[in-house]
Structures are given as C-alpha cells and as structure tokens.
Length: 139
Image 1 (cartoon, rainbow, N blue to C red):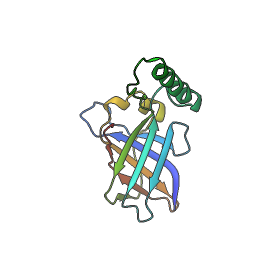
Image 2 (spheres, rainbow, N blue to C red):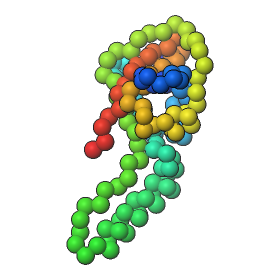
Image 3 (spheres, one colour):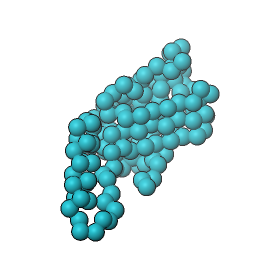
Image 4 (spheres, helix red, strand yellow):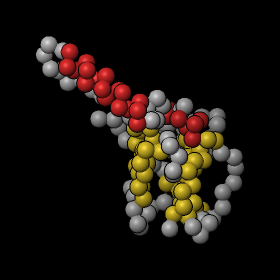
C-alpha cells in the first residue's frame, strides 16, 4: 500500500535542489496514478491560476464565447490546465529520508522550469519509493 505523502526535487543545476513535500490529496494535485507493481506512475498538477473548477469553467466559457463571436469558426485553443509528469521505470526503494523540503506552493511557482523532478512516495511500511518522472509535452 502507498500512503499519500509525496516529495519532489528538481533535477537541474539550480542552487536549491531541495525536494518538494506534498500530500496527494493536496488541491493542487489534479490526478495521480501508480501501477500495482509500481513500474509506472503519473501525476498532474493544476497550472497556477486554474486550481479551482470555477476558474477552469470560466476559461472554457470565455473561449467558447470568443469562438461564437467569430465570423468563421476557427479553432480556439483552451488554456493549459495541467502539468503532467510520467515515469515508466521501477522506482528506487529508500529506507529513510534526510534533508529539508519545500512546499507544493513553491513547486507551483516554479513549474515552468521543472522538466524532470524526483517524486518520493511514502509507503505504509515506512519506506519510500523514488521515481524521476519527466514532463510530458503539451499537445
């Protein structure tokens, strides 16, 4: 079983590589999935500004209104609501954690620079699984 703690860190040359500590039920976590054998994991975060359903619905309505006002119907792209990460390799098992952690709000403010992150999820037995998912390209 996997509990709901999760930790992130940037895999970049940043001066501050402290991981990000959050819980999976945090309102900024849009979706997450871990396969039963832990060989795949994915996680999505709401883009800054679209954390609430009301904000996302408003953006959709504004785009629809703009489309309806056009003389000829062109494609109007919706804003990006999510940032998606995926890993398809087995995670590394970690017995204990050390170091300091930043908050998900700090992660939210740096999402445009985080192409590869480290995600550490605490299991029920007290150990941790560590993935290094990559940012999925936006379509």
